[in-house]
Length: 64
Image 1: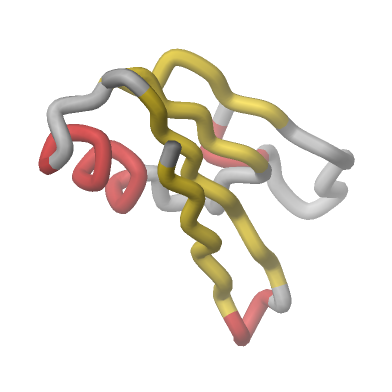
Image 2: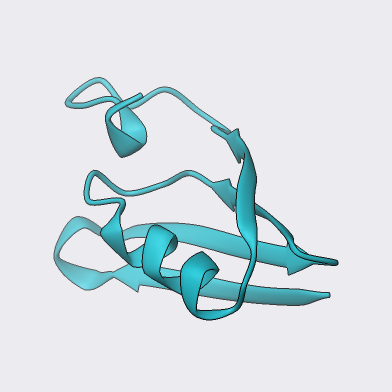
């Protein structure tokens, strides 16, 4: 299992990419989802789950 934090200083927001056995989950995705899509594609994984731990009043995470 691989777990990576993607942190954006200017927004003080952290997201997580978790991957195991060719499946990936993204927790609290940022607005721009290209990074997660690229990470999964580069590793031969498919993003199967997206989780949000809290509500963002200013935008919807990952444009869900």
